[in-house]
Image (cartoon, rainbow, N blue to C red):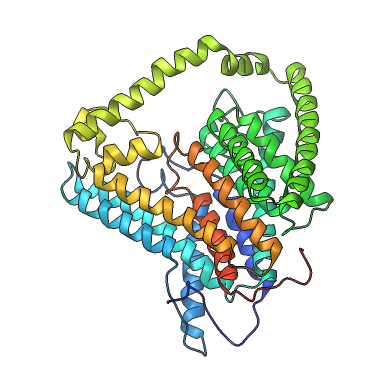
Length: 429
């Protein structure tokens, strides 16, 4: 059986540089503003995250080129499943309305996929120290973005123009912000609840910043997804008799209550200090506006998806081809609606295989590690991954930089678990 992608060398892994890479790339992944008009040309698509992504790929290629020992490269199964999905994208593009537009979208997918693989190459031989270092680098990078967003939302609204209705900060809209914070919470709540990462004051602050930032985005999809992930984890631990995990989840509930108190204080302050705050929150929570949103956005989104699927049910109309079909500029939201409309039934099937492979890999890896903390981390991550799938009903993750950072870290944890003799004498870092 082939082993997952890894770069093997006799030299020990250098922790500090890769930790800095994950910190910097995670922070830049949370900056989605562009110089030009959004979606128009290079200036409307390229951010500093893409620039660093190119640098990461080049650094990985250089490391492979300079290796004294021959590198052993074998794609993890979840990456092979992504390639199968991209093959469907390619076939769909060939028969779509505008093949060049679809091929460009495929290139966007393949680029960030390649960056994720390059991160694995740079990480080198995966050990507990390497994985923990990369996790902490990602925690601090995302925590920084959360801190900037909260500061802008509560104190300095002039920093970014942003979107109305919730925290956006360094993101172009609140949807991007919610997807970013929700995804990293699904990674770090299991890491701390399992004991794989130890909590200290700085890490607690970073975690609370992510939680507060997610709530302030007012994005119901990822709030529901996070709560669902926690509920799945609690039920899973109860049914499998993991008493110690249930106790840790009790502590997590206490931490959540502390976060709620902090959030209440922030809301109370913002209510009097931030112009229009009460109206923005009220519009998000009023039942009449929720009904209006359902009848407006969701109705239009579903209508476009059905129209695209009806036009080409087997392979879809091709990515970025909705304008050619309808005459209107629109992007279908939601993972399954987007796949159905753009790449048809075959794309939906390939997408299901991809997401199922990730879940299966997490579940199986949790039973393969001799390290109880790593095993607990993986099974909790599996449950929170189910919560993410709920959030992805609204958004499409495969073009998002944070998704492929998440994939790199998940793959590293699975690699570690596949070495059955993995033991962590420190019990956390």
